[in-house]
Image 1 (tube, rainbow, N blue to C red):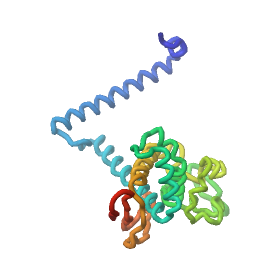
Image 2 (cartoon, rainbow, N blue to C red; image 1 turned 180 degrees about the horizontal axis):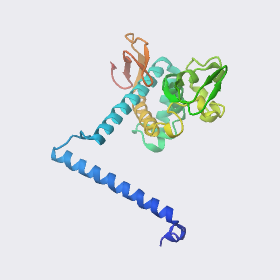
Image 3 (tube, helix red, strand yellow; image 1 turned 60 degrees about the vertical axis):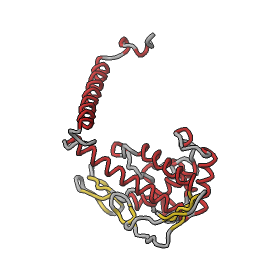
Image 4 (tube, rainbow, N blue to C red; image 1 turned 90 degrees about the vertical axis):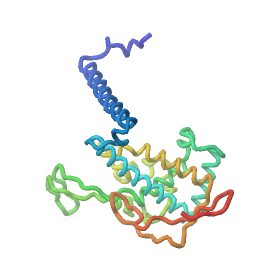
Length: 260
């Protein structure tokens, strides 16, 4: 029997119209997806297609992969440099998953890994994004008039000694041993690796889960040490990324070592 409180007797005309529009949008999107799937199966199109929707999906896919890869790479870099944190993360992974592949229930319990990822994002997150001043603002001795373009440097906020103490440039995951709100003294703008509000990254939850899965699978199988060939040269694109890549040596916990 349908719950009485969820029945149409309790829904306003606006809510009913909203639900009708939402269903119409979902049906339209599913129709587009189904047509695309049929074209892919028949060989008439690739997985994205070459229309406007395909271009958007392709651009989103490429950008998303690059950002996730740079995050995973940079976490691996810090694990290679900071062996103590690597061992803590490995111990946590083994305690939770044992010899099994990572699963969602366990992923949510990876507190140490979350600390390591958040500290990596603090030091090597989004470099900065342009913004338009919506109203006149006084910033210290400067007055920012309306409608001018400015660049907000997240990297500056994330490394500000006033906000993060004098060791702001050091890799210290213990900053995030409690909730992020406590680490930032309840100031959301202090730590915004995925931006804030309506401009925040729509993929941040998926990116965090995928990063934890990848790192868990690595830590279950390998030790990580930094290769002598590695040259530290991060460059700002959307986020700070390794200009020459990251070269590490993976030592199998069961077999011989290999380089990557």
